[in-house]
Length: 381
Image 1 (tube, helix red, strand yellow):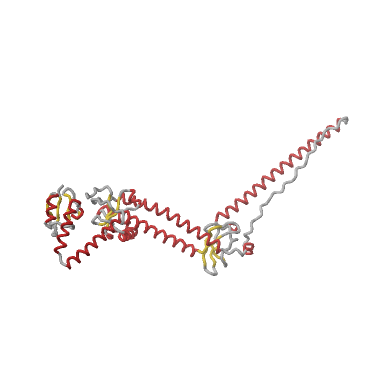
Image 2 (tube, rainbow, N blue to C red; image 1 turned 30 degrees about the vertical axis):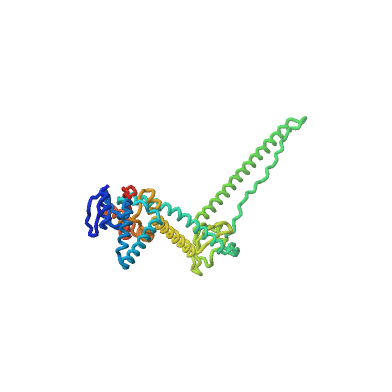
């Protein structure tokens, strides 16, 4: 295996084999910080990361320690502390696989964003549902339930349903001809029986017609009342706050508006059950929704910042095979990922155009990161 060495002036030397680079370490021409790469790859790493040079670097360190002054020793100690801090910082996260840069295309980035927004949307539904539940409970507690007389004044009392009166059917006594009577009487009795039967049938017909008409009237009244309820009436000229009896009987429903012109307060109905309506001030409902939005925004920032800072990917980016890294393909830590997230939500709309031209969005440039495909070739350790 051959290597390319780059000195302090930036001049490249090589390719050289393993024996030659080991000899240069013995001659102190190569130090653990010297940039080195495989001759077949374009990615650089520190010579101290090469396993076969570890023993020689330890011997080199001993020679330098014996020869350096006290000032040099202090400087070296500080560098060692900084180097150990950097290594421990890198070991605290999941950023392990380093790739040769291969920029993520616009389609992958948009699809990853949509995937993440679906997760945020589901969380938002949960948060706002909780906010609505809290708002309704607050409205139930704060709606006045002691103004029954106002309900009577405003004619909110339910109308009694009209029950049609049904006349009792008359029992029809069949007229049987009497035996041993004259033929004329028999005919007369027969005629009277037929007349009575006809009258009974007519009476039954009138009763059925009456019942049908009464039922139609009741159904019509019910439908008209349902139409009134569906209109969700508003009260824009009230002189007092809404109360529990301002319910569906008055034509109110969920989303109905009530304006108290005396206190200049606006209310919205969250429930119009009979004698148990609940109303809430629009200002309080707006405050609840604002807090729900702030909580959702905070969770979204945490989601992006933590997943990008620890895994170098959100779940959407993981699904579509892309990840975030700094410009030099090193790990982007938490602070940088939070900055990237803030810039993304304010400038991300420009990403499709700039990514097509520069392979980076404006928020990528300002935060100093790249979005790279996982499928890039891995660096050789």
